[in-house]
Amino acid sequence: MIDGPAPARRARRGGDAGAATRRATTRRPGSAQKKDRTPHPLLAVGIDIGGSGIKGAAVDLRTGAFASPRHRIRTPQPSTPVNVLPVVAHIAEMIRHDVGRADLPVGVTFPAPILEGRTMSAANVDDAWIGYPAEAALSNVLGTSAVLMNDGDAAGAAEMRFGAGRGHRGTVLLLTLGTGVGSALFVDGRLLPNTELGHVEIRGKDAEKRSAAVNRTAKRLTWKAWAALLDEHMHALDRLFWPDVIILGGGVSKNADRFLPYLTVRPPVIVAELRGDAGIVGAALVAARAARLHLPPVRKATTAGAAGQPATGAPIADSATPQLVDEPTEAK
Ligand code: BGC
Image (cartoon, rainbow, N blue to C red):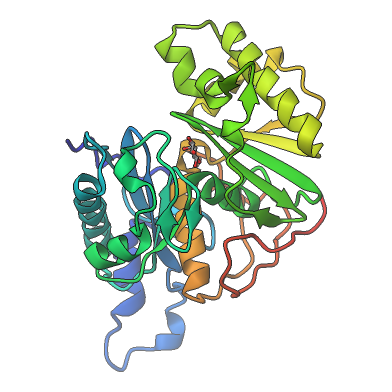
């Protein structure tokens, strides 16, 4: 069932994306092209498959802002490939319609490690995904070669380029707190993919069964009680990786003031800026890199819900090299 479209989270400067695209692509014959200074939008589509929802939007890769409404459809149950793939195709179709372009790169995230385009586990989705050639199947239903990646890795890529990770060198650990716990581990801006740190064992249990945001609501835990479980998970990861900073993302990070005060873990903990939308933005970003789109330096910082915010950080160099990881960034 369709929940969306929701209003664009962060509008592009100068109006809606479709209008911007039309402005940029339709010129009167003989009119002074050099006077049209509207930059052509640098767009890609990001779609984030989750255990409870599938959401997507077009993303302006100069800023990380959404360039279309954000569409969300509940994940069908059972969440088998045969049920999920048409929903992804439907969302992509709505986005293409929104922006008036069918040629955009498409990136898709999934809550599992991805090896050679296959989804290797199914912690919060149907077991039919285990070992499934999802990237090929997605490319087939989308009619374009889609790029598939782990959802935590995508969120990390987005935060490193557009959000809380900008300019952070050293070891950066991002955790996304949702139905499961996703992770992304960066060293000097380079990602070690598929880390799956939600699944370390704590007190004989899969850690994410205790520290995922959904555990707080399902078990009606107080913020303090849930924060203690999350804290224990973070202490365990700190003992293994000694990160310079931990970034906490996922939708629950909008309530960070409710649980951050209870955390006692050693490294500084900062809140993700793109929050629940980082997966969409990261998927689009990785797809754009794979398509060898040239990504200019980020021109302004973006924060969830804040349209057209001025830049708060120095521009970060980027590269056209297709890779899942962010380029090493300038030191903060
Ligand atoms: C999955 C990860 C995923 C995380 C967040 C875990 O259960 O194993 O691959 O990143 O949930 O969705």
